[in-house]
Image (cartoon, rainbow, N blue to C red; front, side):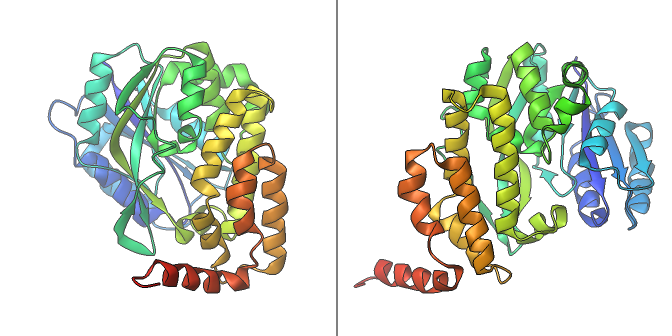
Length: 343
């Protein structure tokens, strides 16, 4: 029967959420899963209480917890590659240290692997939780999520067409370890580095091209931390600057994989625009207190540069991008008044 390694890269300032991430998995270790699941953590030079957190969990897990510590910050890419190198399982579940597994997630994934042990990888669904509104949850745009609750893909084109955007969420990816290792060797340091803040994307892309036996599972198995605090915990920039960076990185990766004139590139960029450049999301960026007119201009120029090929960008996103951040509260109030009864 296939075995599974939960691979968690972490860094300074994540001790509390790492504790939560590990607990969300260890609490699901039924007797029949204990011999099949291990936890791997690579610590990227933290200076907080991460070591103490790991020792507490080691007391419960014993040899089922494998750890490594870099004494200095070596960057996310090196840390991610290291945590997979620690793994011994047939499959690895990449889990961000500030995310958690939903109850029953481990048993669900192990059942899928038992049914389809030939898979190269699985992409699962997630729940989004904003730091500013802990009780509330948000779901991904239904136009981005595949229409079927569970689907097996047998062609790279089908995988890229429906899962390209979803595969940049690290915590929702379960992959065959040997396929990952072959992809890393094939890409080399330069190829992996092309992923910038998302080094797993070119690796997953190479895996799909080599063996496109992929599964989409629509059940929400991961609780994904989003919002301003989550962004600042990873990238010390404003949400608007963050979206500029990730859009540039995604566009470059997909362009290298598909070519900018391909239908796959357009489909992936269209999915990204619907999710992260909707008028509501643009308003969210501009409502942040650190946003400036210069930031408005940088956001506008960057988005035109990457999305100009899409007609829906010009009709749906551009009008919101042209509104200066200082006028956004007025626009929101006006919109709410029009929606009110009798408005």
